[in-house]
Length: 222
Image (cartoon, rainbow, N blue to C red; front, side, top):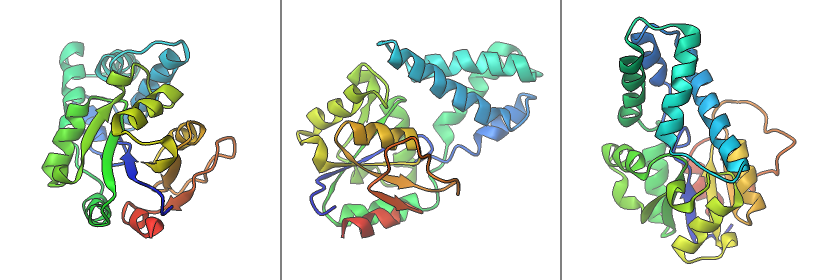
């Protein structure tokens, strides 16, 4: 791990805490558990487009899948207003409790820090700025500029080109096993953040290191 030059953070769920999105669903008359169904549906459709060789913006897919989920679970608001109320929640999400200290520790090691998200870079900018750690990041990248969503190989290749390093000099940090697997197949190294307590799926390539929080990534780098 000593050869890592750039640490690449996933944003949604890795840095941001999506738990408050359940409250947004409740506020429009839908059950809180629908938030997880919606986010899984959003990812599914994004991956399907990537497999077909195309892409659509995160927010566009988010709104489309949200309409379907709300139609199935019910809402006491106008559908358009309900969709916009839930989507607005992405702009007010907090970071996980371990993020500020963990990112600060990593920055102190001198390693370069960047993000790579399937969403908009502006969302990550707002998230990190609110947490007071935006200045620790050299750049915030989005797959919008790559033309394909993670975990397609082209998304990670775009990140390596943009940062001017070989893929093997990059370490992806993500809570999603599918992201870890994609990065590994693209030649990056990867750290899996095990927050949910679920076992790592055996059908994916395993991470180089498993951590319970962001702070342990600095320990792994030595």
